[in-house]
Amino acid sequence: MTGRERVWKALNNEPGDRPPRGELLFTREFVRNAGCMNLWELVFQLDQDLVTLPLADTGPSAWATWKTRDLFPMGCLSGPLSHLMETLGWRGMALLVVKERDQAVRIMESYLDGWADRIIKACDMGCEGVVLADDIAGGRGLLVSPDFLKTCYFPLLSRFIKAPRFKDLPFIFHSDGNLREMVPQVRGAGFRGIHGLQPSVGIAPETFDAKGMGKFVFWGNFEFEGDGRLKDVVEVKKEVKTLLKRWKRFPGYIFGSSGGIYGALDYRTVKQAHACVGPYYSRGRRFNSSAQIHRSESYVRSL
Image 1 (tube, rainbow, N blue to C red):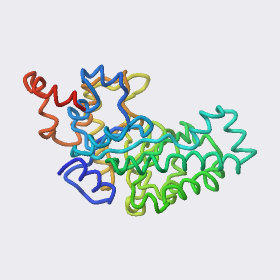
Image 2: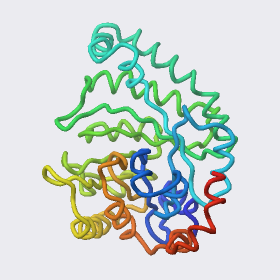
Image 3: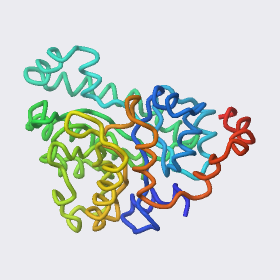
């Protein structure tokens, strides 16, 4: 079974040969520290089932290249609340949301509509899903009013992603923090799943009703960070195996970290975490010898 097939199985809540594995992002620093020439080589070595690329920086030729691989390519887009914060600053965004809701919605709506054609073009070239990333919560709970989210924010997102122009394109919602009370809103808005699920803020498989969620994907729920330090390989191996058992009731589970892979993380630890999800097949083993690396260099550089 290919990575693409595993991800589609998860999106449709159908059991595959194992849960898909993938990350929301790999920073350039981590790619360098892992000794890889580019993202493709890293994804290849870790035998990922999906790859997430920024819609703002990924052109047609890149999508066309990723389309030829046997994994699931996704585009990532900053959400409308992030756009408000980037445009107005935190204080300006908060004031607008509290005092001028209609104006806040108009700005967010204009922002999303400006991305519609670019999303469709990316999908024509090979993108198969979209992650909309908006950090609407922190460790202690929501960062904006629940009423605003329920009456303005999620209805806006629902109108956007349910538009006929996107047909059956799967959208995944990402947020850090404790947003448990908003998961029904995420699902009701038409998202096919949610990414993040920080365990350090109390989110766990037991938080959700496997049968009641229908065709809904849960992606993430693992943290490489411990109590004021990074976990070692032994801890990671043990915790990932336990986590996978706890998510076994959910066919729509995708393994990954809650927030992505950054430079401070050790490559061996990350590789061990993903190796626990299932055996490394030929894609991952092809870089095990220096001779094989040499033979693959020209191919990898072309990506």
